[in-house]
Image 1: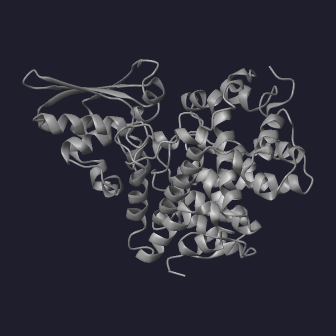
Image 2 (image 1 turned 90 degrees about the vertical axis):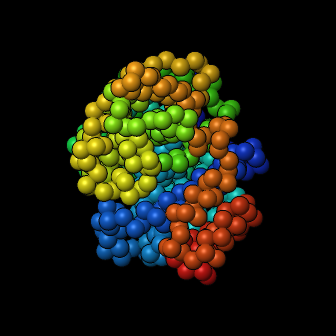
Length: 456
């Protein structure tokens, strides 16, 4: 174990990283993450559950540094980050990562807000996105499973650290300052997942809140505030409090891989672990007669982390719990034949007797997949009244860059679908073009202006 605190090692890595060190695939994935997030933020701005955050920030009448998506209003960078991060997570449609949970809605809003406020170039913003995703992945490699298992929201906790790293990079913090920023961020790192069990739209703001808290930590460190360098592995630090260990050796073999390339882009409006179950049911429907009213049992073999997460939710009480219920997603596919956004938003469907009769047949259980199996694989066995058992194993989730059924163009199509009717067609196409050429942009002003709903 290194004697240098892990926060200092992370700060050294982040401040030393240069755009020229980034592998082409890491740059491509950073662009896709930005494109995906901007589309989600535009669409998320239409939801009523995010209006309180935006109204609160607008009422502050803060200095106009950074753009709030769709409205075009401007505020100080940390508060543009909380609004845009909340918008980006509002639809439960943002990215998934085995270590980093959901990095995009913390990293991208922070990078774009501070990129705009500091006049950073596209190369600097891309480097900050990769750096932020790396920090979140390295910390999550040790903590994320334990956090989920005990009910802590990894995106909120880890996102605070990653926002500090992302903002700190764009603010030009020294290694010492960034170490302090991470130490300060630790005091704001928290957030439970009780919303899974009894509902509550507060979940929508967790990523945005992390972006605000972490980026403010960077600003405070820049101005001289200090934090504990041992915030991660110290006796009362991140690792022992949230993962029950002070051992940092699990991070040691992970530095040389750019973890952003393992990002999964969600193609369903659900908790990430529900996606493979939906895909498996789709496969069975395409190859077999599968009348839902003849179903006697649906066994879902899932990774252990997914059993206590989305698979533990059955009866939806609001949009959040509907999206988090794997059983509800499976029932929608079997009974209604689709998993559309409006299906999760319709209160009548949360208590629909046909859907709930299928939900009651779902039996999730933890299963071990081969060590080389793709992340979030799922086995589905459906027993029917005539004695047939239909089975399919979905190896990984469509949306993972390594999955054979996923192409980068899926993310462009997802973006265009999300912004349709909200920003003009020319502005949408220009946004795609600008992000594809982001390394050649001198600043973020034009890109952010395109998200305000008008062609500039």
